[in-house]
Length: 409
Image 1 (cartoon, rainbow, N blue to C red):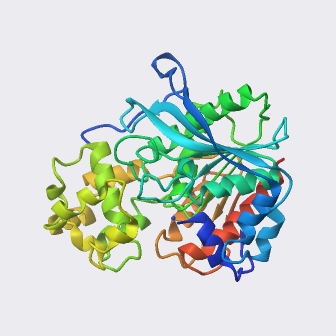
Image 2: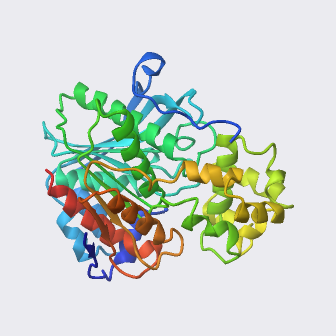
């Protein structure tokens, strides 16, 4: 298979403003709809939160820090309506709950070119999500307008209108939230006499890359009679959490977004019931000061100020030593449960990742790519746009993905 290297775009930072503001208890077993899961995807409420004319879509692009010329091809075709959707789903332990998301629908189109699920990147504040008008919501509006597709954007559990703490980078619940959002979106389209065709595209960046891979896997393994993936485009995601990405636990090095580590630790402890208290895995005073900050009200910048430059310094020394040498350490088992490279995707997959990424290491993409190749997959590609960092991949990956998806319409 070919590994492509694209021309580096000079205007990446401008588009970043659009994309980012970013084992005692078994994990849930995701099952196809039916039986006690019949409530999943049921609409709780639908609210029109935005209507954009073609001219307004143009304005969105051209007012983002001076639009890079590479984006101008997106601004055309259809006006768009965006709906906030609240729907029924299950939480990370399989119990009934609600979640929210945004649904972008091109106006004046009876049969959209495709049905798309976009998974957003890491957010820490509950209101910084598509259904609350986040900048990533605009991706749905722009894409729907430019390509004539319906775009589903789940907020995930614990964000938006969903109660509780967000189970950060938890593959199964990211997938169920997206699947049930798609079901709710189908119901809305049916009410509006919009006929969805059989083209289903999946994409997302960073945490959204991980969520996209998890969604693809779950759809293929458990929902093939309901959804068939046409093409999947995971971007810059941590697919090898228990391997290369776990270096943030043990390497003793500085890390840019320091809050990612406690976000993950606290989330997994809640999902998997690993320890009785944060004091069992966090040093003092971080065991007391950090957990309250993850209430969905604080920004990542605020939390970063409370964490040392080497984020692993917040973790108890005995846990780090045990983690290093114990293959079955509870946290490593939880991470392994969320690895997403050891399976065989049947639909075409294109990965995108920059080689100099210091937040989600490029090796995550290499591990997944090589694993798929080893299993005999031929319709797999790895796009390496440049040697830049995490933010440097956003624009080229996004543009490449939109162009690639258009080949399937």
